[in-house]
Image (tube, rainbow, N blue to C red; front, side, top):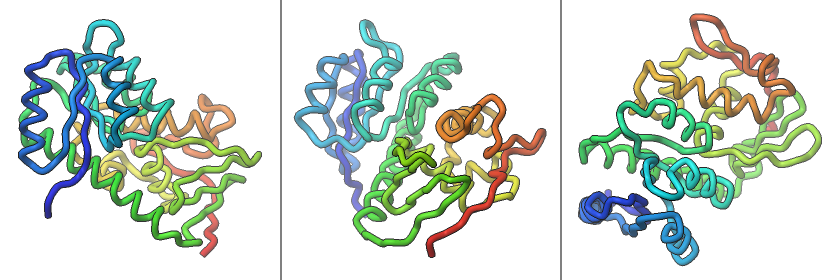
Length: 241
């Protein structure tokens, strides 16, 4: 199956931009490049971008600042590039809404695998929305979660925006209410086995989701920690179907 998707590579190193552009275009993607935040915004305004590959360490506006900007102003998928010793920045990037990360130096095959995985999620999400089904909504603790339309409505009727990974995580929990899910199982359900199994990625994602649905994220009542095991959505989930 031919690869499809439009990618923007944002890195201040021209050599990396050119390499990724040539490599990804060889595999069927349309690729644009930008060396700073201003150039990134210009491309984002002029082109329909599916995925941004964003270096965290850049002069001027760094990758974390640009990740925040992208998440606040678009629903584009984001893969951040980090150094191997930049665990804190990697975690912060995920907290800000990046969909995945890859550490430098990286292999071309690993990068391509990450790109395929993230763009597949984007494509599947689009197919679900365009299907237009009326079902697929569930309710829990006053929340309404429309899995087809990818909309989360609070008990007060306000829509709460979810990143791709937050949506996938909430889907995993609502598909398995009152069932303890360990980190390995969550990685399987998120279809993101490429993440390092012993890093804090799942914990970061759970924290992000708690900040959006819990009355007090520091004392969660919905997504509870099962010490030494994993997490559980401790509430009843009702379906429209």
